[in-house]
Length: 114
Image (cartoon, rainbow, N blue to C red; front, side, top):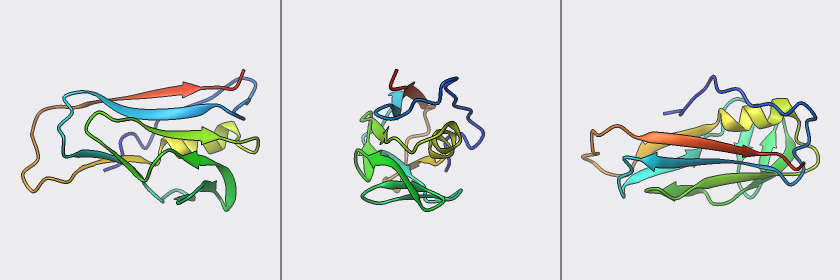
């Protein structure tokens, strides 16, 4: 499931080159919990992160388990709209056939270059 398909991210100066956005389960994490990157909304993951076919950054891993963070580091082409599209593409799931029913808290941390 997408974590927050309506999340808003912006930097008044749109200076994302070298900046990042990180998603992490900060409360209630189970070992089988996973954060992944969804290839929806014009955003594709692989060795790089693309928005509308343009490379905007790199992904730290294909998925993160438990409380491990999943991070996208942006390059010089990343704009506010690109960063927002990326933030909206993080998703949560569980590798367990019987996932824990406890609530989880996922925290987003955005860092600009300046």
